[in-house]
Image (spheres, rainbow, N blue to C red):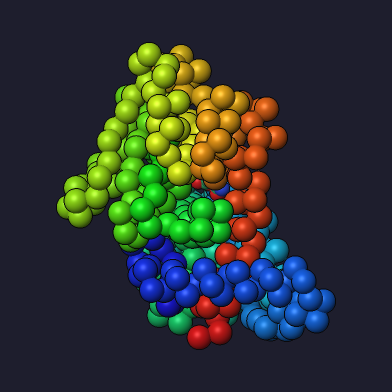
Length: 323
Ligand code: NCD
């Protein structure tokens, strides 16, 4: 594997092996000082360029921490759209063309434009440099989906046969899209999409499911009981925030904000999940769409999920750079 651009690229077989390797890496890291030192030597001398042109906490910190734990060197910009020549009007293509001449082994790119990771990868390929998409606008966020499915697998014990409620902003939310594409690789997975009518599931995802006969239904909240009903069926609830930075129409944004309270995950929802051994995931950040007190309920696994991001990204860097 040279690049990581979108979740359609992974095969079921690869995922199985990758999750096994992630768990093994996590075990070594957490239980053995010796093992930790071995990991630190594993990618010594390799260079990561961390190019973040959009806000990030988890993706950037976990990738950069992953690189440190593997002994890599890092050159980073955390605010590339302002602190690089992009603000002077340089194109991302020119920027990457030049960065490639500084011989990184891998470039992690987050950018506001959908499709940019693929364009950049075709440049980097000429230099035999890998590109990992750390989120391209409303497009995809493949490494987030890897850690989401890894978390599902480790909490539930299996991914086949599960019912997944995906809720929130399903139009602009790249994590929700990447997740559905990835889960569609597994057997008998069923989806319930819950969103305000203005933020319904992306048409590309919907046709992907229709073409493959993968069952799903779309729900919008009307009488307030719909989320609870879905929680009674779900093995996993994956909730997301409204991507307000991508919604330029202020009238639309206002009408979404007005109904936001209808789409909040409450303690009652989290308890319903907990009673059935089901889990609540969220890519974070949470911006009011999950009640604060839910943090302390055992079905809420979003901090564990974020923590898994470190190990998933370490395993991915090893996979790409040790090949
Ligand atoms: C997500 C993203 O950037 O798409 N955050 C993350 O990487 N964990 C979700 C979001 O910003 O809503």
